Length: 268
Length: 307
Image 1: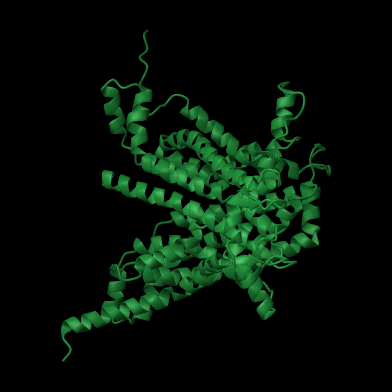
Image 2: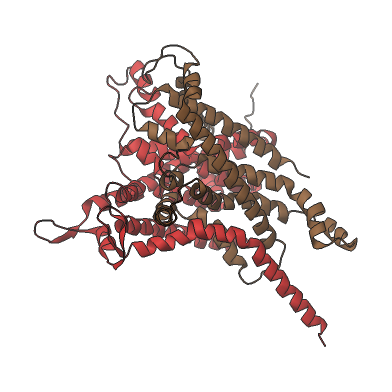
């Protein structure tokens, strides 16, 4: 019996092969990283069996604990500040006729995305090092300020998207029922906006947590965050301890991203 | 008497003013911790360098900008080109271009593959691309190191297969940086490509086949022109961070293979030449702006074509 081959419109020769190879390549390095984190031996070269040894060592390392805590504190403050500022800015730049300065605001808010991180990093180094001399203050404030700035565009994105897709009729109804502007905002707009705000906060939190370059140049002595601590360790002979830290970090990021994915997908 | 028109105008003025007040915190934070410092840096690039780093404040000098491209011979004071800097500029542009081309070559089929899956599985594939994208850049760079270092997976597998006797030294070479940048920036290529392929109208592809076009011809004459905005967006999104890469060349290039980002760091660290560092930073920023302008013009043009 002669079988007729069906003609698949969408197929392009070799594309699926390249695609599957690409997915393999995307996960191979991560798999290698995870595998060596469970290496029982202390060398990166030789595999000596499975163990959780390096996870315990990393968890017990005081410098790692401090750096992790510092990362969390900075990310928490920066994301909070960035989300509040971004929410206000999003309200000010959506659902309006074009007004003088609107384009300027867009450009300003998105500016941190346009400039290479290393350039912003050295510019901040220049300015903050002088302020440190003038004021004598060298705390975490500088890092929090720098992180807040580059987190704003990331927090702004989902909040603005949410605002633009929001149904106006409920707010109009509130106004019809003599709600003041503030009441309408507090009891109608804000609850509707909440998923966008949560998404924006999480995005900002991850971006702050992940930052290496700006932190590396802005931090004062002894202010390592987890990523800059790892960067410092990579210069030396590394042990699987750094893999263990990386794996824990990775796991945390994946959890956050998954949560973000689901929050963003939920349509109200 | 105030007319209705005046009341409306007054209300509009109030509205604009409250909108400025609302956006003030975001604008101020970005001004103090992002944009403002760039202007300070611009000023620093025109000052004389201090002996131990920093600058001699207020002392005007063009030495910083001069040394971006030229150097004075220490013996006979002749002026020559700064070969070391030029080679780093060239390496940055070259590696960024190759990274863009390789990610496009890998990313295009990948995005096409995702876009042609059944709708409910697409999300899963997109999610698989998104996870590495949101993973810390340093961790991904470090993960790539696990693959390409002498005792890493690549060398181990090739030795086991008998392809090579000795591990190939990839770490601390341009190739290592390329591996790292392609790996790290690949999702930035796939995601915009997928976004435009998802909207692809396959009836046009069908029409092409009806008119006896071959698969290659359909790809070249129908699919690629239709997804061009995605190709341009992806290329820009990969090229720009590649040009300003700092962590990847630092970890995988290890100081032997420097890119612009590392050259800048050097001037603010051991080089103790802040004005030069500032001048190179501004040059890098200008290069990025040019790339962005090319993109904006391109986007505007294709926007006009496709409505």
